Image: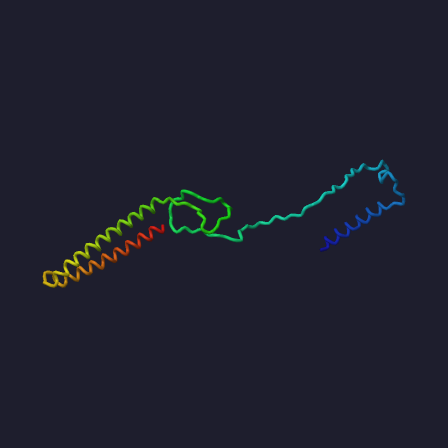
Length: 171
């Protein structure tokens, strides 16, 4: 603490002495304190122009209205019928998906429906034939009931096949 006070006091004394030496009775001349010519100074005219304030902001733009496209089926795109940023209306064609896999699946479902329809016809024919034979006891009641069950099963298979055809037609 004493060292700091001595350094501060000696620094103050040196500053005061330098100030007193600079304060003389002589008047300063127009040439400056060194007695020579005035120093050269560069002068520039200020620029006058309009300044536009602007700010940088980090952010993200998002559309006010937004539409999510969700396909009902998967497949390869063979056509895009709009440009990015273009306005589209409800019902506009946006994409074309390769139809060949869907056409093949539909044809398969139609074939299964035709096979189910043939099984229904066959089951009806056998049930009609057995109906006349039950009366004369040429066919047992158990066999007749089995033929009825076969007909109901074939009809259910036909309905399932028709539903599959309808589903594939939607695709």
